[in-house]
Length: 84
Image (cartoon, rainbow, N blue to C red; front, side, top):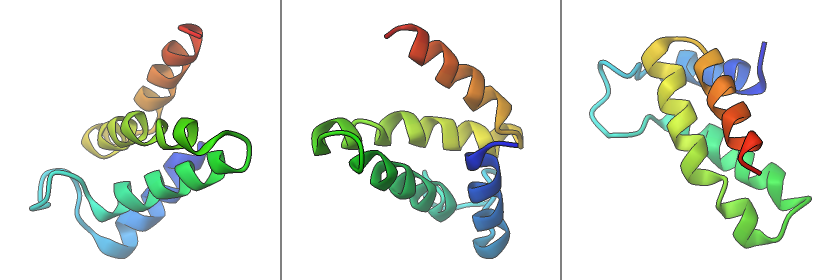
């Protein structure tokens, strides 16, 4: 179980909007989860680095909704971290 899996999954239940039915390109659940991740990174990183978390988070959130699993995003995150 991942933080994104729990958080975004719960928000999707609250607000609906799975990838196939939403009107906007990004769901409210994905936006709120991304905002939470940026805020969490603000505690340990400068604001510019924390803000840089937003784009990859939106991509991983899209994968979470599209594939109904957090694991593709976990794999992407691991590959991203290997680059550093």
